Length: 284
Image (cartoon, rainbow, N blue to C red; front, top):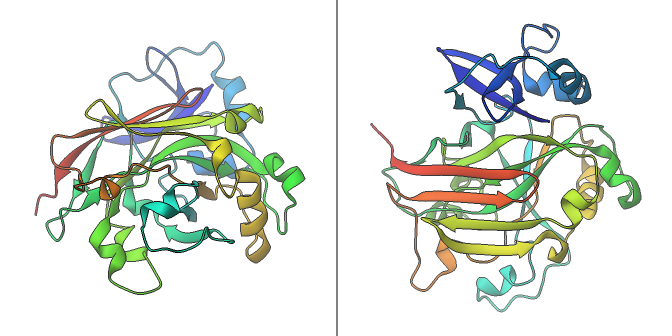
């Protein structure tokens, strides 16, 4: 069972995704007004049970960022073995992971356009797996880290490349342009370690494969990410960790190939799905 946030007729809903449409579940759970609230309450299994056998309520919907009211989104940077070499700065592979925050306003939903701002045309793509925390905790050991994951989703962690270099020690301003990235299309409940351990992530731009790697090659695996992050902050249900992107982003090609209006970007992981976005210029 998959769960999404969507709009129809000017109203926002969440519910189960089927091959023929959506089964809205808002009215059945007034105590959980959003999908984020359901995750916080460890309610995905309850939602699945409630949707079983129910008819489709909506078709022709618009997907929203899957948790549009997510409070905390942490991204792991430079997390594949060849990514560090892409920077061509002579630095050693990092001992500790790079982390930076993103905010929900910087993301849109599946089949919606990524927005290229007039201040820069260096909009880039980064295909990633994102995990959603279901059980909070502090100083979580790697051995039990997977017990804290509620669901998986996909992220195109869109970046305005020249703005990440505006300062010496942070990339926040290049990572948080409104609707420059996407998270979705839906949440897939996490029930088996193989969903992460055997995952292969592929990013395509206009049908051309740009990124193709397996999560098992990450320098800081998901178990380590949860352990490390929970050392300095208490993880809470609904927190999102965007786990890292492979080599092949547009900025690292020769010459660089940034996204432009009309481009189509797809991030695919078997067992999770495909996150698809177009690109448009911001309308002022």
